[in-house]
Amino acid sequence: MSLAAGSIAPPMALLAELTHRCPLQCPYCSNPLELDRMAAELEADVWKRVLDQAAALGVLQVHFSGGEPLLRRDLEELVRHARSLDLYTNLITSGVTLTEARLASLIEAGLDHVQLSLQDVAAENADRIGGLKGGHRRKLDVARMIAAADLALTLNFVVHRQNVANVPEMIELAAALGARRVEIAHTQYYGWGLLNRDALLPSAEQLHVATAAVEAGQSRHAGRMVIDYVTPDYHATQPKPCMGGWARRFINITPSGRALPCHAAETIRTLRFPSVQDMPLAEIWEGSEAFNRFRGIGWMPEPCRGCPMKEEDWGGCRCQALALLGDAAATDPVCTRSPRHDAVQLALAASTAPAPEFAYRRNPR
Ligand code: SF4
Ligand code: SF4
Image 1 (spheres, helix red, strand yellow):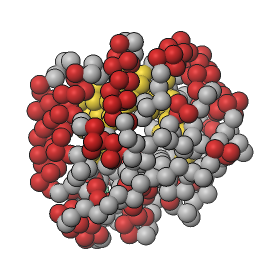
Image 2: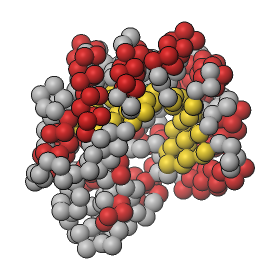
Image 3: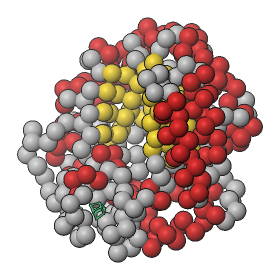
């Protein structure tokens, strides 16, 4: 299915995955299992051309992400270029390599916001989860440094059965560190998260306690700090509108330049994702087969096709349908209306069994 150029609303945000290299090894990392090597990473000039095309297309925000985007020496050059195009710039980082001098040069280049990830509140468990000794202490120093520089700071905690009991302390830590926003995000089960699902998936009781803690935190910190909560799909009765709908609001670019509607889309091997090295961004967004395959509602099977919720959740997540059912075009099995909801129920059974060891994410060789 191909739609005429100009008839499709532009993406709101572009996620620029500058590298897959990272000093940490989180077992829930959203990067794919097959990571791009450093030698395949796009040069700064190509990224700048992509930013030009994104701004022309109508993108408003660019999220510099990875892996660890600070490992790119040309990050300041890219931030400066994005700001010159009036794009809002956000750095998504583990923070462990950030120095005061680097922070100052990023601010000078026009960086608007930092999203810093923490793995837990106590160093021992945080370092175990992230696979980097000393990482947590370093992150706390970096959070204070960012707040002292008066740069907008969001702390991001990915939660799962091995840290979710600490949600109240995570919220208080974020407030103490001067964060303007904290995101408590349950693990999404794609890529490394799917590989480690049995070690990460919380029980229904853990989820209930965490949700109550977030609600209490939201009322305690109302007006001072925003607390966002990303709930886990598996315990829900209806899926989330994954990425706000396939190819509706976001576009991801991998380190080597493949354009995707979401982090995990490349798991759908029947689709061929175009590269920004071969095709302009507008053409990819509006005309490519991969971006149009699950856009809108025309692709939907029953029960989605006849469902009143279809333009709210857009049928859920295609990668989740593929991961759990082997069919990216099926109704997301998280939905209780799916004829295959049993696949989620089966996975949930592991959430109360003893957790297996983590399979840590490794850097590309
Ligand atoms: S989730 Fe962890 S391993 Fe993956 S990019 Fe972020 S900090 Fe690195
Ligand atoms: S049937 Fe489809 S559209 Fe309806 S709630 Fe379930 S996933 Fe959403």
